[in-house]
Image (cartoon, rainbow, N blue to C red):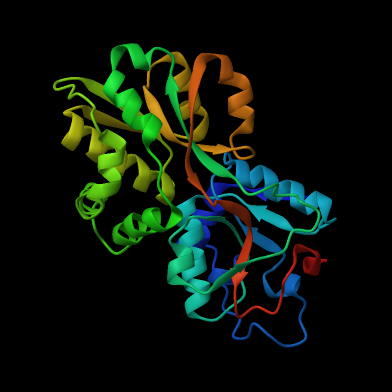
Length: 299
């Protein structure tokens, strides 16, 4: 039977409370090879993130699609997943995590996606900008800038990597804006300043969305004189906040899969300004040193 364990189990493992063997990244096993199956090597566990994330729904579906009834999907957080991956990677031990691109871990480690021939994780996604109804009337310049905002996974990776290396998000965003004036000029060309106006940006605490939202805040402040308040929430409240007007905008809508349920629920109460980043991907991720290539290999 498919099992999803709670966040407190993940936290306890990472803290060392449960001891060796609960997670591959927390295991005391000295070898990742030998005659053991991949499942035995990782205790039939996949390290996930927040239970409300769309990728967790897809990961759970993949266990059903590939008939992996004896596998467990571990709930936790993006940070807990990264800690487990880092520990396993440094020790050259096997581990399977839920992963997505863009993410800084692909720059730090040699990783690969497991092939998904059954399509459990859907097609590659894109990140879109969504704003509340009426923003164009109250904040015309901000609306236009958000409509023009578009960058690449490589742009985002620069900001994410700087934050992972110790810079504060606002510092990393300011550096990127300073070093990419031509691109920022395209977003703000011929837009009037809206000095003194305020705007609320909602986002989820994923490294990718922290990077993009802080860059947008920096541009709104520096180029348009708008003070943007950052609202860090879970995915559901992020969409609900923009829909009911308690937040003004988000640049963190992953579609057509991860956040599709939220779009279906709130689409009549929102304005979709289109794609701000292409080239995203979701799936199960393992280190390159693991001799496995497909989710089918987990059987």
